[in-house]
Image (cartoon, rainbow over all chains, first blue to last red; front, top):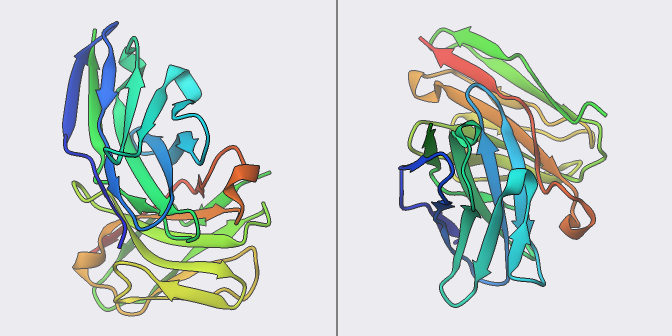
Length: 113
Length: 116
């Protein structure tokens, strides 16, 4: 079975400071990894994905994530957080040969001015 | 392109009533799925489909039925609504070959269901 863990329910950061949202995963096989963001009363929006290749993936709105196979992690990062980055962030994984996308429990990010 | 369209956006049901949540996509995606979102539990997979005529169960299938008669549509049926099914429901679709798309899975805007 595949699973995703987001160990922090909430991350608080001051505007302008670096933002990190943690994600670890467990799959049997090569993982496809995703980050999505959800704003209040909205659906999920795609941020970035890792399929293969460079371990550092750049995505929308200045976000990036680093795939670390040995630590089975895919942490989301942003060098300088904005108040508008306050939202709910989900990490997700699927096996390369499979179809099911499994989500973590989500991390709420609060960026304070 | 409309993407993934879910209807209705809001619904209140009485315990024991049945209803169908509609999901349609216009991207010719093979894969479609239904998730429910509950506070603190992330998104949990209810049912999914890899193509017309093919469906399978996810993590939490009990109390829900699906069918996939066309590539475009993937309705979710609640047979006898229970308060435990109060949730926000999301439909998602994707192309089978992810490296040919930029956006991975495309999600609908959700249906907020309350069962009283």
